[in-house]
Length: 304
Ligand SMILES: CC(C)(COP(=O)([O-])OP(=O)([O-])OC[C@H]1O[C@@H](n2cnc3c(N)ncnc32)[C@H](O)[C@@H]1OP(=O)([O-])[O-])[C@@H](O)C(=O)NCCC(=O)NCCSC(=O)C[C@@](C)(O)CC(=O)[O-]
Image 1: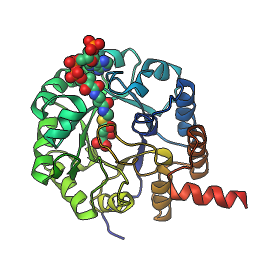
Image 2: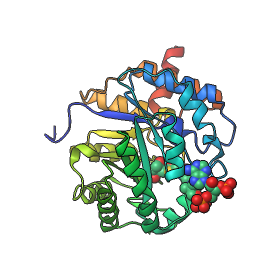
Image 3: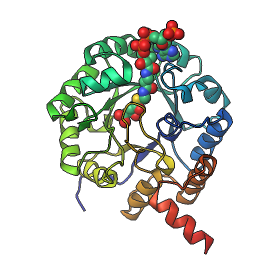
């Protein structure tokens, strides 16, 4: 096996936030809370719970306070939330997240559509958020959208990823996620985006966030593992899609990544059966099958 491949991987389940943010049907806070509980029971050590964004832009996340305050926290589990500006941070801090996420884009057009400002303006907005969070002892992660392709601008060059990673580093963002927002990436392209990020960030501070629109997300995860990346965002049942990236499907399913990693002898600390139950719970609520191939296979096998 490639010696760069780590023996242990940390997965952050972003299903409750990235997975549900685009759902058109209302999902009650109680269901979101139960999903977080089931994920932590399955062994997830970090869950991205919600976002503090405009309820006019993303109505599904309007219950952020209720969800964060309703969770029974487990020691050793981290709860992260998205905060695009100081207003978001001021709301989020009341709910005591372990980690906040500022989210920018390597594409100007996506930045405008997603957060209504240019890349340069986004960094100006993030800077005081990062400062306030770090002063309060809250860890700061950055997400970089559209690192290989953009729904409005097409292919994104690695130099633009390097540029954004440098800006994020410059304002004190501690960890950076390399996102293939619309799932158009293929393994070499994703590796180039990660290599560009590694010009500014240590390998231990970089994670992968791959959507599966074109069915490449597992291959892209493996490509990132081959560079030594050991942290990934995944979404239980493959939930999700971004409201500002039409047609993009959910993140790679946590179940599929766990199955692949365990099959490679890589530890995750996650119980696949309990994870599949968590995915079945939310999929039943939404009235559809899990998007995870592994979950569907196991659930079919269980029926006998
Ligand atoms: C970023 C803003 C808020 C800027 O929105 P804006 O309109 O430019 O902000 P503004 O400062 O001009 O304020 C306009 C209104 O929004 C309110 N407002 C302002 N800020 C907040 C806040 N934090 N929370 C609640 N309300 C807020 C503010 O109070 C005001 O309310 P009004 O006076 O009209 O009633 C807006 O564009 C927005 O909410 N966008 C949604 C972004 C979003 O959630 N996108 C999806 C998540 S990112 C993602 O999924 C990608 C990722 C991370 O997963 C990685 C990947 O795959 O690429």
